[in-house]
Amino acid sequence: MAEANDELFRKEALEHLSGARELGSVLRLSPGWVYRASWLMGSSAILCTALAVFVRVPVYVSGPAVIRTEGARPVVIAVLPGEHRSRLMEVSSLRLTLQAHPSFALELPLCGMGEQIAGTEELRALRGPEPDVSAAPAPVPVRACPLARTFEVDGGQREYEPGMRGKVELGVGSQRLLSLVIGKDGLLP
Image (tube, rainbow, N blue to C red; front, side):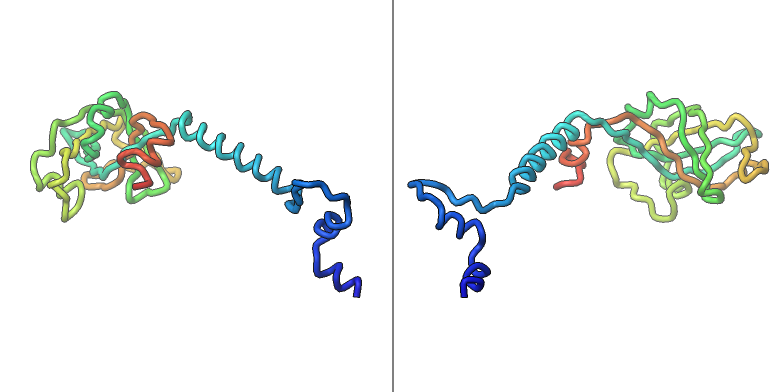
């Protein structure tokens, strides 16, 4: 019968009842790991907050691209979001990934940036059949000039062909991790 009582009550409670009684003494029932875990959680919260405030992450913009020929030279024409127009002026090169070779990317120098798209037909040619022309600010056309008429991929030389489609990506700076999470365009509403 004594064994049944031992199983019914926790060891700490039985020790407290059998020990000296002090007025106002607290029965400590939480294990030691709870105390250490609370310090670990607090330290983690402080570290995460510091990282969110001080760490900067790179910001990239991307858009569709098409190869055209001007004279006898290939030119890459791309459309990028207009809200990054001022940052685009500081960029000197872009990264082109062609649809025909998605695992291969080319680094190309920029050779110009237009003011606006000439019309919906040009925008349709770059973006596809249903462009969203009502979006503000207006998309920015960007031109990149390959240094050669060919590029090397899969161990062979390929020519830039008019009409080849792809995607361009440009690094336009960095911003704090916290502003990515809770900023005006952040992950949290």
